[in-house]
Length: 126
Image 1 (cartoon, one colour):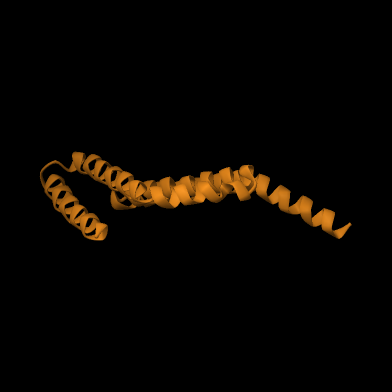
Image 2: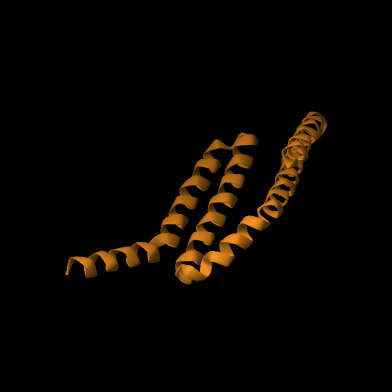
């Protein structure tokens, strides 16, 4: 029943951020950041069994490819969190730049996978 804990945390955070925003608007974004990071760490702790299962079966997968996939997933999660924080604070232009930067980083991160696929394709066609 972790979903109820997550929802309760989100509701309490929302109320806290609304109160802080009313009286001290400059600190509301810091409160939002702290609540978002706290929730992110809680969710990452819930993902430990899934990560352990993936690591257990990673022996059957190319280690370099597996590391790239995990790195890309981390980039996506962190970038989405930062983008949402920027949108919540009303900075849509900055959120769009974070989205662009994360897409570029994901492409750069996945480049070795593309090279491996291309090399396999060339080998297959010869």
